[in-house]
Image (tube, rainbow, N blue to C red; front, side, top):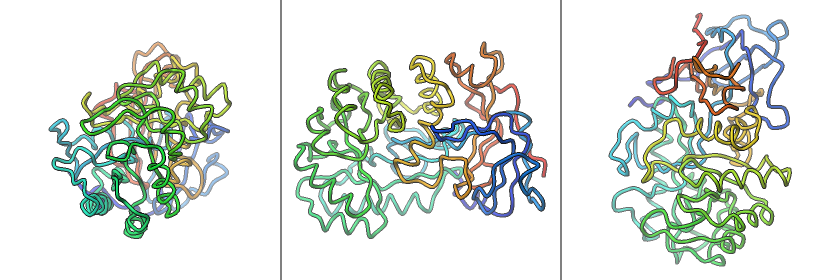
Length: 397
């Protein structure tokens, strides 16, 4: 697989014109009244009508040809190892396949599938730092993999978190996949991680891999991690009563994943809506896992939560873009000046019963992807994994 240099680096001014539908990623205003995006050096600099923005001097021009543009999709929960390979499924190229599903950013919930994963404190810190360094320098197809998420173990002290943070580690792997499973232990370590700017996720529900444990509502509430990891289970979910309690008594992110219990995921979404807290909802795949690799997993989650979750499609896209960006403190996920120029070009899949993109997703169909841009550079054209779109963009210059 190519690294980021081979995939192209941000350079020059990019203009995207003739956008038919612009999805912002922002729940407060999910659809923008605009048809043009201008980016420079990999960053968005202007969004608006063509007559109102400066399009002169563009080095690259993309004609959207009336299709929709969304921020690049974010998978909030993946388990990478090294490179574009997963030993869990003995599969190469899985990250590149996710790119063909519109995913431009991934967040590691722990490199737990590494054969012989070290569980001693020195080894787990070394693994986290190595994974962070590896994916910082290697981006399959241009996908941004935020890796280096240590699985915390008994015996760790505050200095361990300070050391990892200083080395560039920004995430904790799923709490509960290691020996720390009690709420009081987890709470102390989450606080240390937060003190040094690290974002944390806790496993929720039944065991998913050997060594992981059952984490119920009491542990999740006491630990107070930043993200309630796969609130719908990975794979076995808590009772709907416990999920309701977590949504009501905790203010942290509600993560719903593809590899979890769909009924439980839809229940969590309904409770978040009743609480008027949809901004807490984020999505992931929780893959690679025993159920495989899902290149279209984020698109499937969007379609599921829209079609069966009584959610407008434009809001469901926010769960995989702006919501995650804000709760994870990322510089992407929203169409606004200053953000990373990461875009997915989509349209209604050919022969869908939906009258347009949003209606087709609301009816449960996946969109067709015609192009993906990361940091202002075209990474793929027509997706090899989605159904063909009615309309596809074209690079003019």
